[in-house]
Length: 453
Image (cartoon, rainbow, N blue to C red; front, side, top):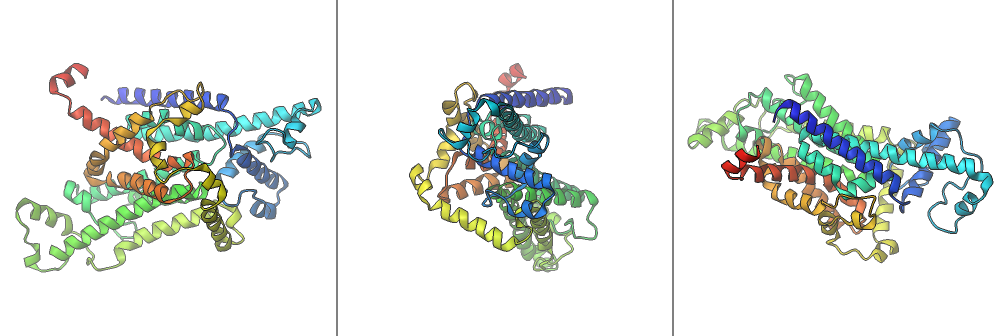
């Protein structure tokens, strides 16, 4: 595909994402958690407007969730004049509430119009990050971007006042930046081919190594910062960081095992490979300057994780005064909630995440607002693309499969199975689905390929 055609396709995908989310913003009814996060944004905005740091770090109506996305919604409030005193902003969810009675009073019409404008503005802010996420994936793979653009759960929960859109985006940035760091590392080591790229232990080009190039440090730093912002948006999306750590450790252990077998001073006998495979292994491990039993190769991972934690803390004001106590309270809340009556009454079985993956329920819930029920096709293509994605880019695509798999495993084990939680799997699923499409395309008969090209 020519560069011009690729960019036209990317623009078309982004415009599709804009159109679908704009439709959803206008037509979706008020959802369960929207008043909760709307009130949280209002509380943050009032604290910022008053210049009251103490209120900012202590007055969060939803302390069980981190504060970054709520700060985003606060920014929308701050673009408008202050609401009149006494507006029951936190009581909008059900019929017969104080807010409904307040809104029925004609004297409150101007304030109600302002609330509606802030509400739609908050939805649009969420949708903006959803569109940016589509753009990011489209730059990597236009097919993946297109599948994310039409994914019904993604359209729904990134067009409403939920916490999903921003951490979805930053989780993808974290993983893709890590993959870019692997690519730079492989290039610095001379691009010796798939064997090295798949199992390279990242020793000689680690961010802390004196010969490390600046681009490598940049991509690792971007990955860490994005992961910290992800956790500060919503904890569950940090599963992307677990996938990165698992892939890094996999590579380190693979390199260490190869070193024990035949490199890093193990003797001439160990360096003798069997045919082409032995020469490839020797080429991969011979330049590494560190002994395989040295702990130094883990320092980049520790530095990456430390920076991510610092960013998470800085982007979550509620933790500033008592980081450990409040974080523990938040985690314990979720643990208790997952075993509570509300979750039990939902009646979702342990395998419910598969339902969210393979059925486009939002199109049934919201006809006319969600109009692209293609999730089953995307999930099926994702399954087809698991192996091609694992092997893609010289093995660097493995982290995408780990990301999807670890997200699915968490949701299967965790008792709370709300549909929006499935979005932690959506980006890797779309990337795997794009790999599945490429694999199917490559299996077309040559004469058919010639006619369709």
